[in-house]
Length: 234
Image (cartoon, rainbow, N blue to C red; front, side, top):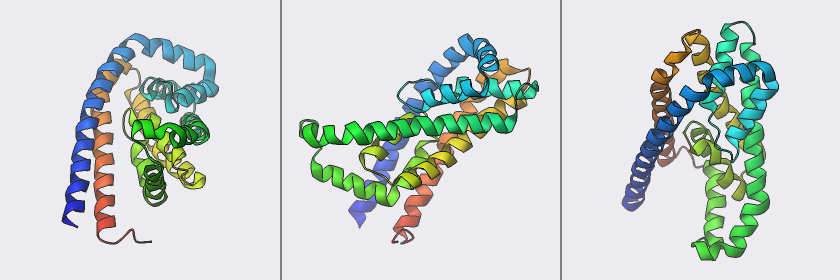
């Protein structure tokens, strides 16, 4: 029991360190990108409408590293101008995220698992490891998906292990929707509340990202404590 406890906290600490580095790298990239493309994206989203938001969020949620931070705040600004509907922007953002996540899930299930079953031994991934991953996602896939959707970099790829591990599709979609909904709501609201002061978005991006990471870590810690106290037996 003592070793299990130590291992859990070590994994959590390692995750926090990795996320910290990823967040800092991601923020540097995003701030540079925002300075260059915010105006262009606002004009482009205005022309493409809600279909454009769905398409761009699909890319953000799949393999293509296109950050949602440069999509939804400009859409929120267009809501402030009265050119778009807040509810429709939110729905389009969530829809695109779900479609991208489902694409990754399908790809991992269709190609990732067979590949690992055949060649995994060359990457130190045995069939037993896959079976353990199946059990893990059967028990904890919901919280892993929810937390993963709130974390920079990870949110694009959390669908891959879910697909490889054959996580129940309905559970996957439900928690992907919740996580994507929270993230889309925050980014759209920020763009709306900043209004004509979109140049201040860079200043708030750090706060938004670190707040989401902190919230995700707290959810993960709370879930670990809940399971350890016997709440996850069923």
